[in-house]
Length: 290
Length: 296
Image (tube, chains in turn orange, cyan):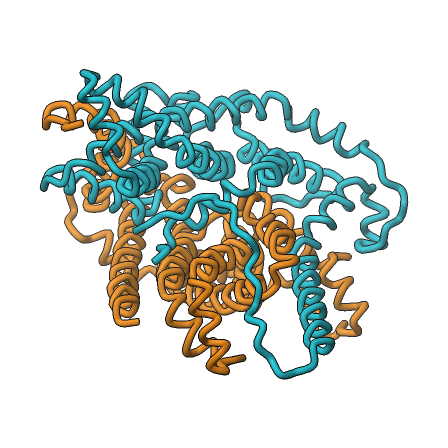
């Protein structure tokens, strides 16, 4: 049926109103708030970019920025390499594909809160299961307080995050694999393409759409990581696992320094948008070229 | 962007061109499949370990974290259910998740219909606004949202969580419904118009049934994300009696020292309902996960 402009606008009204009131308005308000000195219920006068200037000299923010970027790079690279490998393995094992995918996806159904507690238990320094496994393998000397050491805490958190989302990433690559026309794969096999050569010249270009989706999702997801460091280490030891989201939450809801916390959140938004646009532009162009 | 929906397809067979003896190939395939199952087992192992340890006493766990001691009992769970006020939290979570999901379904599908059918500058602009919402981290708006709820006198109410979660879920829902509708022709709607049906009747009798497969996928995807969310309930709710399960798990354990007999049953109770849902409705969850991958 032909929708008139009026009925179209009316149909779109409820969703747009809900979205405008509870997302767009608070976001715009957040941008303004970050330019004030609001602290709890006091303050609120305009101070320009002072919060941002302060943030760029704040050792806590700079440490969080570094932690967030390191965490993101590690998670995005490792999770996608492993996810792609697992997806290719799933694709080539039709007999056990469904059961393997079910198992691999189970961690992604858990809340981040639950994953945090589960892995805190696994890493626990006194009689924890990870140490027990390492004992059994004769690796006593490599044991350490995984979450209590500034060198390992952030990576220990990254491992639990990747454990949670490995199946998720692999599922996306797998669905791309399954959408490749059978005839193409057969032709490649007839031409004698196998192993890594086949992967590089046949699979890799055809997997471009899922690569775009996965890189974008894992980048956005790990840039905003909050629950894991909040629960597993509370930002410690010695600020080594503070992420930008963690700092925003602490500044805003622990110290009630609303304006400053929101300014840090805007930095996170800017980073997310810049990285997101760059990734999408580059990857979409690659998709077209492929 | 095209969407992938649950479909049945016969398992793909690898191309049967090879010079190696058939037996060796088959052996290699079996070995590869066993390897994959082993990897799966390693990934599932922490969950199985959690189930096992949650049934044991602290002293058993401390001496043999990995061994099966045989002293399994539901005692820990009885204590955890009481500590958490589990029934209450479960009810709260169902109410909040259900309320938000219904709200998103109706408003999202109403809006997606004109967005899919009318290509004008203003419909595209509104659509782009929704899409942009996908990249905004919740922390940018959380403080103003908190203040807004305070001014509306909604803090510490189910309504505040339902409205926030619904609004946060709308971008994905609008995107999902719109691309689904774009992939189906408008003929049915035109036929309804010839029969003299107005927009609302057409929506109810044509669009809603048409969207049913997409709706199933979306409801489950949203349930997963709202059920598991910590930040919104943590900021909006203060009274124990209104907590969601995820918040309940957090507030029961907190960040202090714990005993495994207390910790793990709580985590299992927080996780179990969704794992069961997943095992039953897996194909919808997979469809939701793979929604963004183009087919061509």
